[in-house]
Image (tube, rainbow, N blue to C red; front, side, top):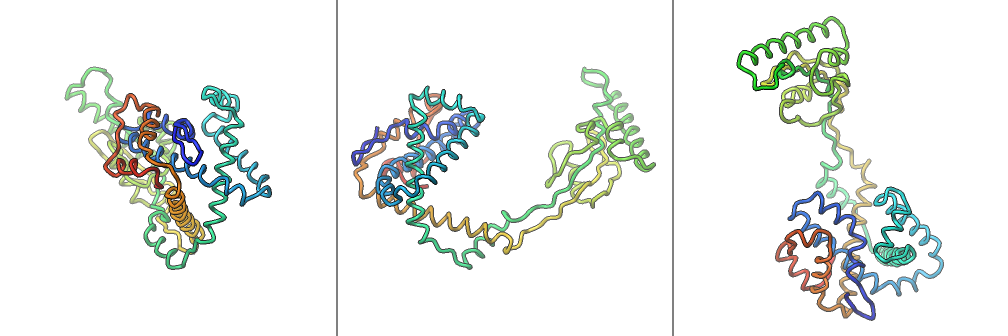
Length: 346
């Protein structure tokens, strides 16, 4: 455990709030990716735990009893969100999980209360210092224009006739069998083209004449905004250049034949500054608040007796999911320095 100013932080205090994310990451990330996430989450959570203990008593005095009702509602929302996201909405599973950790639901709610009180205190104290200027909004919009833009999207319908649909043997085909399969595929796609020219719907022809993916759906692939890979690259490139309702001629590829139709077409669009200005203001306000919050916490840390936290961080890492199996180490020199300095924002 880490002790300072008559307060205590245990390894479980740090790990419990981030355990679900670490367990998920251990299943799907590479060693290096997991390693980077592990150190970042532990540093940030340790910072949060230390910060709360440093200032929550002052925060409680300042907020007083008037905020209790709103804090209780915030605790209820936070608890419900966690039960829904991590425990499939089942309170019994959540309570069983806490019991396995040796915690009660009330202990966790008290911890949430402290966290919410501290965040509200910081917002009351720091948000009045936040100021967003028009030039900041314009600069942010110019630097993040791609985030407010939508690329062109086209709904793709495909009649797909692969050569393999006409190979009847499971053994490697002979050259003669390959030639015959291509002939049959060509004959089929020409029949499909003739049916389309005779007025049959594209969906019906795809359903009964095609032999590839999404045949049962009438050849509907949904919207695409970039060329697909592999054997579908050529038809997808074609449809992205087409107008709504347009039908291609036969497209031949090394794997088969296609006819593609463009459904709905959504043109590329960039939202004007006026329509996203409110969102940008909120982003900038949050950025400034987080910067002020980090500086405030660093000042509080410098006045405290936290001391060297490296042994404590190592203990947390050792108890984190998958740490024993993986080669967990500091990501780079900056991480090692961060451990020696103590917790920091980021």
